[in-house]
Image (cartoon, rainbow, N blue to C red; front, side, top):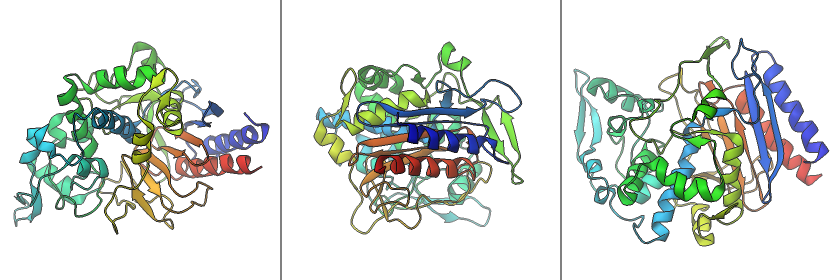
Length: 395
């Protein structure tokens, strides 16, 4: 760990938690191909309590779960068990029941019709199937309400059996696609998704403090989710926990983990698929996963909220052209932070953010537990942190 990076990053974490309206607690880490080059934590696990946020604090990592499910899918592709152009209904027949939303009638009831073509596994990997999330789509939320479909945080299969907000392949729309892919993994492996990950990803990477269901040791170190009101006030929500155990292992958002465990996944991608205790993916698979997979002319962009308590409107690096890989956003141009074109990144609902720069050989993760998403304090801290990593490398 360079003294320059430690000084800069420690300062950013302290400012993030100590500024007026700052985050309650943050964990941040950066790595090169060999190991972590920075580890830091600041603040507390829960406002109003004196338990400090530590590097081994456990967080609900929400959509940063997706890269692990994508890895499990690509292992199946490597083995020739599935192909990305296969119809998803081959593996999860229930997906054939999903209709395209065609508006609402005068009584507010949804009108639906069959899609013009089958949803493929590639559609699901690229978020082009037409699925959305209820907090990023007013139409999805309205349909769920009309049909009494539970929220995705209920961790149930019923919660992803919703509707397509457009035809498969029509455009990029972020949604429950990766949860469906988790069901494909389970169908092929004959086991729960968490068990598959434990055997085929966690073990070769040496990941311990990670799972859809927390161990007692993890639960004792769990950081509390906080709500930020419109006036900026933060309120702890200690009882807001994803179902333990979940009815369904949600491949799109269900894992709990420490930041340190996630760094092992980032290093695996930096090292062409090799983990500390074995290979997870072939080099050529990692290369494919790291490139834009969208059709020509299609891009991935920002989002608008339909549930203000869960997400703000936003976009990452709005001046930068962005595409989508399997299962990451790709910045097709250099970002203002210093991340070069062709790098990967994504995020989790409670203001968790990571990036993977295979060109330079660095990556990082910023973890906090705040809703709504794209928090004014935590996201700004992440941008500062990433910028500091690149400044220290240039120095």
